[in-house]
Amino acid sequence: MTPLPLLTEPEPPRGVAFSVAPGIRRLVAPNPGPLTYHGTNTYLIEGAAGTTVLDPGPDDPEHVAAILAAAGGTVARIFLTHGHADHIGALPALRAATGAAVFAVREGLADGAAIGLWTALHTPGHAPDHVCFARADGVVFSGDHVMGWASTVVIPPDGDMAAYIASLRLLLLRQDDALFLPGHGPPIANPRGFTEALLAHRLGREAAIRAALAEAPQTAAALVARLYVPLDPRLRPAAEASVTAHLLKLQAEAVAERQDGVWRLR
Image (cartoon, rainbow, N blue to C red; front, top):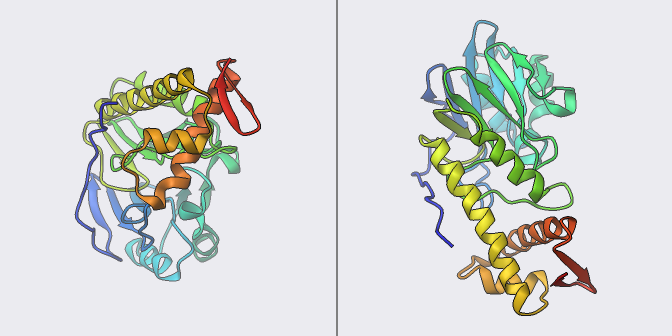
């Protein structure tokens, strides 16, 4: 498989919001880890209606205080890309402190809905409620759907590989996107090229799984040991979950089947 052209960055400043695009600042939460990189990105978006906060981040009082300080104490709206705890843990505290309206799939946000200058793009796969937010100038908040520092983990049953791949293809139908601001890690200045590489990576992983099963029936754990070399031991559960997501996609397509935990081609 061709390696993804992954992006890296130095550890960003803590508790400080810094500019990443016109009218948009990034505040990195203090929750670094093998699945969150330096931490969850909280974004502050300035607009005519006031400051919008996108993804309040984990339940951390210091991070909430940093958001309020960066926003000058006034938050008009809250956008959520999806409902995982590292993105919405701080929502109750921020909502209580500001009374701001929340825009999210779980709050009734529809695909294609316009909120000021932003349009919601439903992109399920990493999570069933995942949504990106796009602006006409080509800036897109890509959440955990597309991140430059790593491939996105898809963990069943909420994560769905078929939906994830379909959502990648949906983004590739868009012609004018110029900058992705992801849920973790640095901005992606070549969003189309990276999304194409990410799709190719996923399809290549699926092809490798099919090739391995053509040789002999295998468990998901055995496939991980074969296909993920080398692998940080901390990432083994996530890798096995993603392989299982691929296998469940193949099962739905009547390509593979599982018997007593062992997968084989049909």
